[in-house]
Figure 1 (cartoon, protein in one colour):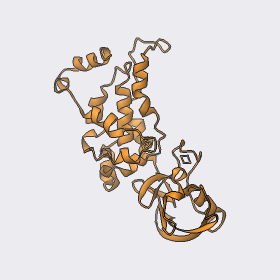
Figure 2 (cartoon, protein in one colour):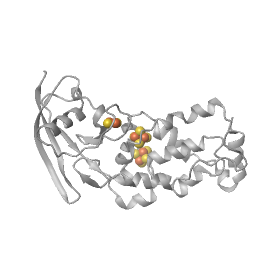
Figure 3 (spheres, rainbow, N blue to C red):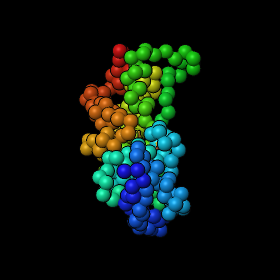
Figure 4 (cartoon, rainbow, N blue to C red):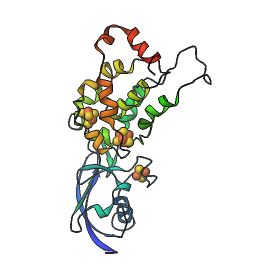
Length: 250
Ligand code: SF4
Ligand code: F3S
Ligand code: FES
């Protein structure tokens, strides 16, 4: 029904604490949760803090938990809920709250900085990079990542275990490693070895929750994590085998 009133329960607070508050708000045909948050900001809750940017599922800013599920607010249609259902909206649980629905996601930027950058052979000048289309396509799936950090938020390794954060980079950075591992010119870092020894890949026990929440439908576990976990036993003892796998991979 156009203009129907719906019940929302939204977490309000900051780093010192907070609580869930109830709101009754108008919802119209075709709206998403972010529309409703914007309406609340225009009416009952002008100081409600929420991060967003594109409203098209492409900037990765509007990550939140809706009825306990990590989601993009701009891609969650109101029509997916029952009419009499109270919709609960809370900030991402794995990262520290700044205010209301806005969290401090700098953990992810730190992990990004720690990941060694793409490193082609030293004697290869920029402009002389050549790679086959098949190699470009192989890593394309991982490049769709919008850095919404929903996968990072849902992974149980850090969700309830803050102490694991230091040793665990998380699914978003495992697929970054996988992407570079598939790159034929990234010859100076053994990405599998790095993932295992530095990124904490061993903590992942393949629960696949990360894959389930990815709004870009990246097969994080099957196409990224599992291939990175698969090591040829010999490789551990023979770096030449690894280099060979780069040079002769196609
Ligand atoms: Fe978001 Fe998917 Fe990228 Fe994780 S891999 S940050 S869930 S887009
Ligand atoms: Fe975490 Fe995904 Fe592994 S949710 S445990 S990184 S499969
Ligand atoms: Fe950009 Fe939702 S506002 S992904």
